[in-house]
Image (tube, rainbow, N blue to C red):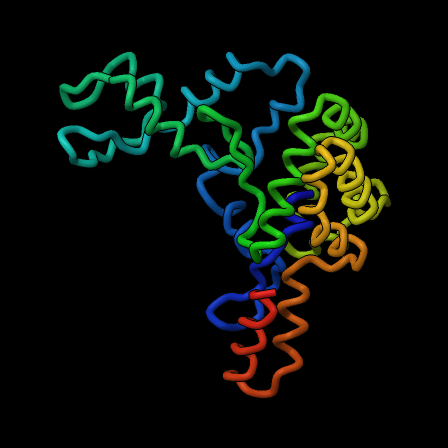
Amino acid sequence: LLTAIFANSPFQNGKISPYLSRRAHIWTQTDPARTGVLWDVFRPSFDLEAYTDHALRVPALFIQRDGHWLALPRMPFEDFIKNGWNGLTAEPGDWDLHLTSIFTEARLKKYLEIRSIDCQTTPLGLSATAFLKGLFYNGAARRSAWGLLKGWSIDERKELQKKTPVEALRASCRKQPLLDTAKALVQISEKGLIEKETVFLTPLKELVETGRCPAERLLECYKKADTLEARIAKIIHCAAI
């Protein structure tokens, strides 16, 4: 849903790509051991220990020693803890560094990092922050949001992961337009914020009312211009506002 709402990377090498969020598509083509969605989070038994076990199974990439970066052979981080490597033993800082090399759509470090949103203009960037705060920091909002989505199967979620980089808010699940779900989530988020924060949702509310993600607005500007220079100028203008 976040990929769909905030899709904003439709170009590749200066040309229109098949994707409204090419960034999201690229991540589906990257090391599956450390990227994508951690599907087990949707199982009732999933907890912090399960996340730790998952992170331990992810292959280690590198460590730092004496200011130098050392690439490790492809092995689960737990093997490095148990057996060491090349005479070196694991240190607490290696675990912190390892967690930064996990690129799932949401990842846990000392905070929960949400990674599904393309780069935005400042107003929409603030909307994204307010949107997430309204959903995550309010218990009633969390329960309402989960109530909308908990019935979706893992297979349905996987299918959406394939469709949203291409279709964004035009995608659907169970014949329900994703746009309708996005509108409902924005309303839930607004109720989860304090009154003075709701103003930051205004650009997002306008976005879901039009049903167009930011990438579609960029493409509209691009197609209206005749020359490459004019197209670049149009894109910069649209991106700025």
